[in-house]
Amino acid sequence: MDPRLWWYLARVGGLMSWWLLSATVVWGLLVSTRVLGPRAVPGRLLDLHRFLSGLSLVFLGVHLLGLVADSWVDIGLIQILFPFTSDYRPVAVAWGVIALYLLAAVQITSLLKTRIPHRWWRYVHTSAFALFVLSTVHALTAGTDETAVRWTALLLVAAIVFLALYRLLIGRRTGANDPGAPPATGQTTGPPTGRDLPARPVVVQELRHAADGVVGVELAAADGARLPAWEPGAHIDLVLPSGLVRKYSLCGDSSQRDTYRIGVLHVPDGRGGSAEVHALRAGQRVAVRGPRNRFPLVLAEHYLFIAGGIGVTPILPMVRAVAAVGREWHLLYGGRSLATMAFADDLMVLGGDRVRLVPEDTDGLPDLATALADTPPGAAVYACGPDALLTSLEKTMADFPDVHLHTERFTAPRTSTSLSQPGSSASIREFKVELRRTGRVLPVPVGRSLLEVIREAVPDAPSSCEEGFCGSCELRVLGGIPDHRDTVLALGERGRHDVIYPCVSRGRSPILSVDL
Image 1 (spheres, rainbow, N blue to C red):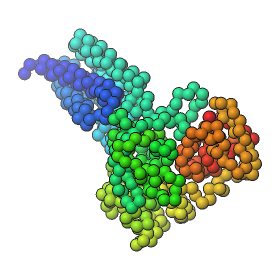
Image 2 (image 1 turned 60 degrees about the vertical axis):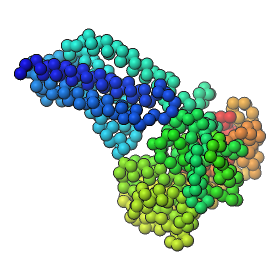
Image 3 (image 1 turned 90 degrees about the horizontal axis):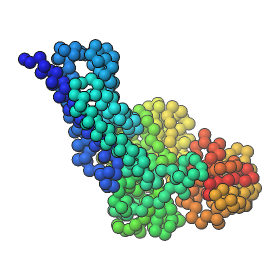
Image 4 (image 1 turned 180 degrees about the vertical axis):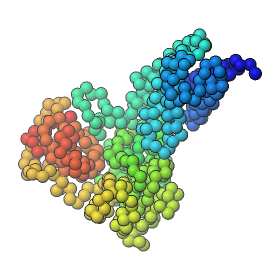
């Protein structure tokens, strides 16, 4: 056998692996930007990205086999596993060894993508840029094909730099036009408020019966573009044709970016928002702000989900996400009757015997104590539903200090009037609010809410529940001390001076300055 065969095999394998790896990076950037168009990326384009990556691994194996078999360069397993141990061009070979480690990390996290937090995969995947640079340096300095590599490298570097800058400056598919992005007002810093988020036109794509009194609504972007990404627990502000703004939890599949899905319970004696949603028709235009997430899903080994009535809507995508990654979970779902329990069939398909449906008309109220007793220590408990359910759960939790409770309310708690900070006397005295952007100072008398006064100057100030539990009216505080009477902030956050929910909260200081 010609002794040069292994050297040629190593050269061909190395060059092909580098070219394919470079093509994978370029294609990944094309897929993640608007270069391929504003619509959703077809699955076949992502499949091509994965195919190029897999093929580069095949040729990398050929490259390594040729190096180990070739007697001239004298590279063995030790030199492949440990950088700077090769006698043949040790620094040049070391760049290839380090690149091999990065490639292994990218490939392993890609294979485990459905079983690890998405942000872990994203952070490791970003190292593909460093992988490209290291492999290019290795190809230029370790081999004997400098001329071919040099000109190819120049073209690839130019393409990748252009696409990377395009992605950063013009934006990813959820970038510059993402309603979740902070506004560039140049006045203040901090998280965006509901008022700062621009409304995105959407079209009612489908309405379907989800349960007695509950309609499922699918919304798609009016321009056909992908909608901003979201995670389980997120909600949108739905801007209805009348101008009413209502907050609804997203209950679809967070991996599907073509549509948003919400479930809306008709409340006959409500303030009109649910009735207007039920009167919508397919093809009708509305708008959304967000998504935003005040009910995020944390990492845990075991989950207990508790839903009451329409409170199942933020729980459904959580169950779907946890089931997808193979975590242990159980769901306790109560409702007035089986016919009123939205998405029960979807949940049964997802969980089977993990799901316990408790219709009140036949089975009574959910047994919270038993569900908690069957939950292992350290579990995360997620609950959403009517105030009576959550209040009972919070009392029951006192006997189970080794599990962690996360709740979201759809109605104000009966004790909301007592949620002001200790020692506050703001409920019996007047204060003033300064609208910093305009310089106006308005008195807030006893008996009137801060939101009512603000609307005299800013009629379109956003709100939804106006009872202190949804967070839609959030404002940044620029000066003064707020008296928090909402249930959006956890007990440990009630000392914050940077935010206020003016529908129920007031000022403790004589003047409260807000970002309006």
